Image 1 (spheres, rainbow, N blue to C red):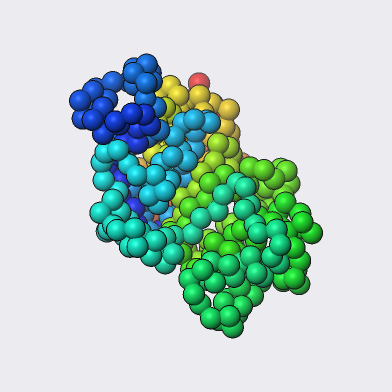
Image 2: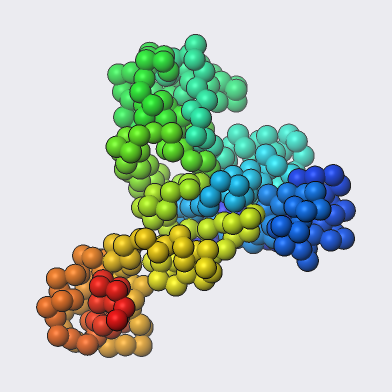
Length: 339
């Protein structure tokens, strides 16, 4: 469950690839478009991005290949040194950390899962999961106990002594997830972790991921190019293009109010009724009559009532408290398409 405490704060972050990027940023890049920067012989992997990640939330960063999403996340963990701007992680400016301090931050605070499973082929499931604890210098019995706990958590109990080649793709990804969780990270970075899986296993892994998040409440930055996956997992979605964030908002607000033509194209095929919740439609100043609906219900959930109900405004409650009411006509427009 997210709170209002910042886990990551990025302000005016740039990552330029090319010769003398710092000098180019200070003298020319800030006023130029992505294409103009490219014509000058540089690539703007991240272009003037300001974004915040709250403790306990799932922020999904999405975009097409080359949009900058992976580069941005690597800047968050300082796998890339930024060219300009500032990144604070748990209040620490990561560009000011020494190499040892940075290693300590990654070991103690950050977990990472990537599309390529990266498992050690000659180590068992249990040994793979325990590996980061071994690197930390934890004693054998303590790391074994922790690894067993993580293997059980991801549903691989009974396969502790299997080798990676004896596992399915989904099972291998679970080992990767268990390994990243073994160090008890506060912040969890996942870079397209399910994209190599077939659709059925991918759906199962999304279910598993949401189950784990419900139990653990991590701060998660999740990269995907799949909008359906983003809608299913995200508290908020940041859509990137050419190194910049086009829009960052809740899934409901992005599909209801795309701020750019690029974002609109991303959302035009989405069934808005399955995404938009009563809470987003509720106007705090409006008053409805009769029985209230729960803020968590989608327009799709309310479809039958919306068609049959005659009320102009329908009250909405969240955790038993009134948060206003929404226009039935507006909800019908989301359900059926605006007239």
